[in-house]
Structures are given as C-alpha cells and as structure tokens.
Image 1 (cartoon, one colour):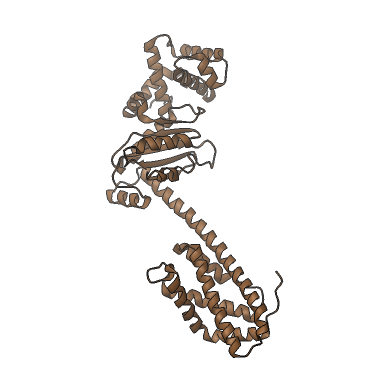
Image 2 (image 1 turned 90 degrees about the vertical axis):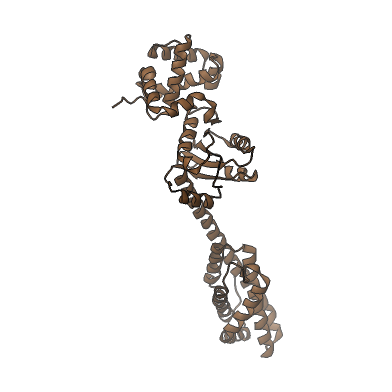
Length: 402
C-alpha cells in the first residue's frame, strides 16, 4: 500500500509528544483499566505490564507518525502473543488497542490545535492514523491467533501425555493420581471405563470429537492418541452415562473400538485399558466398525484372568494354523471369526467377507484338517472358538514356549 509522506507539522507534533510519553501512558492505562475487565484490578493483565506495553506501543506509534515509513509491527505482534498466552479474549485486546490509539490521537490533535497547526492537514493525517491503527490491529490479531493455536496444541499435547501416563499405569502414587485427575477434569471417584479405538490410517484420529460429544452430555473424559490407537478414560457419574457413551462411540466409530468393564478407582486404569484393547482385538482386523464391550463375551474374562493357560490352549488347538504364513493364518482365522458371528451360516459369512460361500466352506474344511477338529462336533467347535479368542487376545501365542 502506497503511503503519503508525513505531514511536517504532524510529524513535529508527534516527535514533541515523545517527551510526554509518561503522561500518554498513564492517560491510556487509566481509560483501559476503567473500561475493560481483563486490565482491571482483578483482571489477567497486571497493571505494570499494561503500562510497559503501552509505553512500547505508543512510543512506536509516535515514531511512526514522525517518520512516515513502513510501520514496525514488532510491538503489536508481541502484544498479541502475550495476551494470547495470558488468556485475554481477542475482542477485549483489540478494544484496548483502539482505546490507546484514540487517546494518542486525541492528545496529538489537541497539541496540533494548541500549536495552531492548519486544521486542513489533520484530515489526511487522521486517515493515515486510522489506516495505521488497522495495520497494528491486524498484526496483533495474527500474532494472537498464532500464539493461541500453539497454546492449544501445547495444552493438547500435555493433556494427552497425562492421559497416556494415567492409562498405562505409570502413575502409582494416589496423591499424584488425584492431581492428574484434577488437571484432566476427571472426578476422583468412578465408576470409569477405558476405551481403545483403532486407527486405520497413520495420522488419523479415531472417534473424532468424542471428548466434546461426551462433554455435551455432561460426561467428563480424557484422551490420548498413539500412532495406531486412540485411548481414553470416561467417568460414568450419571446413571445413564454408560448408555450415552456407547451411543456416542457407535456414532463415531470408523474401525474397531473396545470398551473395558467399569472400575471404581483410577489406579485400575492400566488394567482396564488392557481389557479395552483385548475387546477391540476380538474383532478381525478388517471387520466392519463396531464397538465391543469387554463383558459382552464371557470368554474374554476367562482369557484375561488366565493368560498363560489361554496361550497353552491356543498353541495346543491352533498350533498348525499358527505355523502358517501371516497372510494364510489371517485368512483362516478371520473366516472362522466371521462364520461364528454369522451363526454358522456360510452364505452370510461370504457376504461379510465379499467372497463365494464355497470359498468359506473350503477355508473351514482347511481349518478342520489342520486342527484335527470337526465343526460338526459341539465339543470340537467349543475348543476352536476358545482357542480363537486366545489367538486374538494374546501377543503372538503361536511362539513356542520357552
């Protein structure tokens, strides 16, 4: 934007006012503190800091009036950054800036009148002054928004780190647990549940704005994001909190989601997260989105209570299947899981897997041949189902013992 050279008379007045900087600062500070709460006695900006900021900004402004070159926007930018960190609302910060400008211009115009400056030169000077005010305000706004966005990112990282520490059981001291709960906005007492939601793509945030959705129902929660997983803890204070939570999770789920049983104390968060992950992993990796409560499958409880026995069961029953290559093993296990969910209906299983029913039957026969068990025999089927749960839940149960 092309600028007019400074009017010599106005430049001289502005230069002379720099010797009255203390007076201008006190005048602007008094008005701002009277009219804007965040600068008042109980506000977030200390009085001395306001004066120091006004001193720097008014001095910069008068220098700009005097020289008329491209404005130095360092001071308004720094003011915007600091006010964002202090939590001052942007409209209040901008209003304070405009009040300060108005005070400076009023004193400058009065001084010009006292010195008998030709009134005709004040009109273009006023236009230039308010153009400058807009540029200062724009610089302040941009810096404020950048700082506010970075502050939000920092707070989210800190909140996520605290949630991660809570849910992985790294915090064992009860006093620290309570401090973390307070920071996260969680009540000290439950019941709680933990949630594990699968991320199907790198950088994707499963469950979207789940925290805000739950908060809208008065349900506090805290969440952390891992590369392949989003984990969270939800406090179930209201009687219908679990039903509402499940409804929100089902609406937002884009992949597998597991929910732990309810637990009473925050020091049970680590174990609860393991249960939520087990529930999530009970579904085939490529299955349709579904929210799985841990307690919906009684076998889950058995496997979690006796993991070593479950591993032995998996190796004993599914050993030949586990010896297959990764892809071949996954095909057989996913087909068997889908067949169970389809109540043993090969046609329904084929629809779910997008293949022909005969393909399903072929895979099931291969499973029978490898395990030496028949899906026509209830006892054999029960063993295969239990072994499948163990394979799904336990890390690499096919690894030979010892």
